[in-house]
Amino acid sequence: MTPIQSVLPAITPVLPEIVLSIGALLLVLYGAWRGERSSEGVNVGALILLIFTFFLVVSQTGNVTTLNGAFIADPFARVMKSLILIGSAATILLSRDYFQRERIDRFEYPILIVLCTIGMLVMASANDLISLYLGLELQSLAAYVIAAFHRDDVKSTEAGLKYFVLGALSSGMLLYGASLVYGFTGTVSFPGIVTALNGPTSFGIVLGIVFVAAGVAFKLAAVPFHMWTPDVYEGSPTPVTAFFGSAPKVAAMAMTVRVFIGAFPDVTAVWQQIIVFVSIASMALGSFAAIGQRNIKRLMAYSSIGNVGYALIGLAAGSEEGVRGVVIYMVIYLAMTLGAFAVLLSLRRKDRMFETIDDLSGLSRTHPWLAFCLAAMMFSLAGIPPLAGFFAKFYVFSAAIQAGLVTLAVVGVVTSVVGAFYYLRLVKVMYFDEAKAPYERIPPGSAIVLGVSSAVVVLFFLIPAPLVAAAGDAAKSLF
Image (cartoon, rainbow, N blue to C red; front, side, top):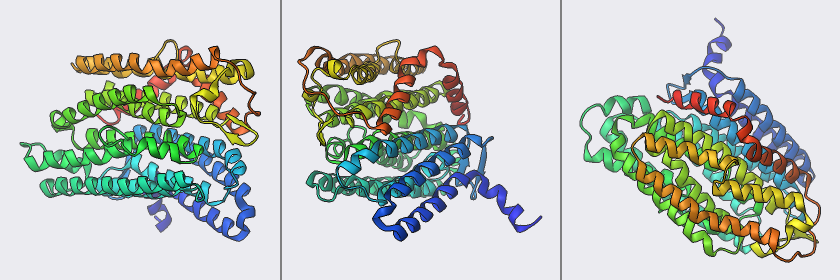
């Protein structure tokens, strides 16, 4: 056997990450060579790179670990990685027109998206605490920069600084929790931790789990570690906000499921209480705090907090059905979020972007198709059948009921009713308020993302079987 043949089995599971890393380096070299004239080429190159990596991911099969067990490529990782790559590619499509109009179109932006994506892919496949932390930090460091990418805008700079300071705090909490887990189990490997926790659970392990949960809750923007979300969402450039609300949320949820189901399945009673509390608090705050918001980006921030709470209902169940519900929820959440932001990025007149609810007045009369798509997203986020959002909540609620968490499911239904108020308010403004001057034509990138997202949200009930089957296989691989 040649050296190359002996290395191939080890690198095949990490091939998507390797391809993205090499591609990012080549894009940096191209950007440095061509200067600011390289922006268009780097954007196209990054988009092609993400699409190619997507096909690499979906072409993988089996359940393989490599790098001494630190990295795992299984059906769960493949589904979540596919969603991450779709979210990142959609972000680049949404960003092009906006950055050109704002005159901040620099070649570094798509490269930062690619670097952030590498970290997110590692998070989805992490099989020990060290690889998980490395992926998390790679994703976070790039995210801090793109939050402050509009350097001449005070709000954008403030958003990046807030994100960085609070992100550093959460990373410290996660590291402290990981060190406690390592100290009391003697291993950082998830399978090793499972073996070490066969006996009685010590207080040190419980404390370690609490700090790990605090760290991952920050990345999820779950209560009580949500405080950065509204300000960062509002201050960041709108395409960056769309990115934060999509791919990183999927990666954070994949990491959370991987940690609790992969490393602590035998101490479910310990972390289930934490997840239930975080879920209820996130659903409640997301529903009530959004009622008074007039800025759509802040409203979407609180909406994302609430949606994280709904997704965590499936994790709280601690069962295969629960994880299946989480996967289905994240697929549909990704489509709803990207669709909503595609509409938001189309609200402009004479190069001026609009972000308030009042700017939607009479949209149904000036842009009927845009109003219909946004209304579909809002009805879906509210969980109204037969749109996809209803089925997303149905699967996590049913998993909770099967696990005996009836109260949690009831709280979820009640907060959904409350949340429907501010979603439906947007629909009322679009269809019943007086029309304003029409907006400019929707950018091509936004049109593509909006068309695909709307098709998923509106037509999901016709062919749900492929997604449900894929989510079932992903969940089965963790148990």
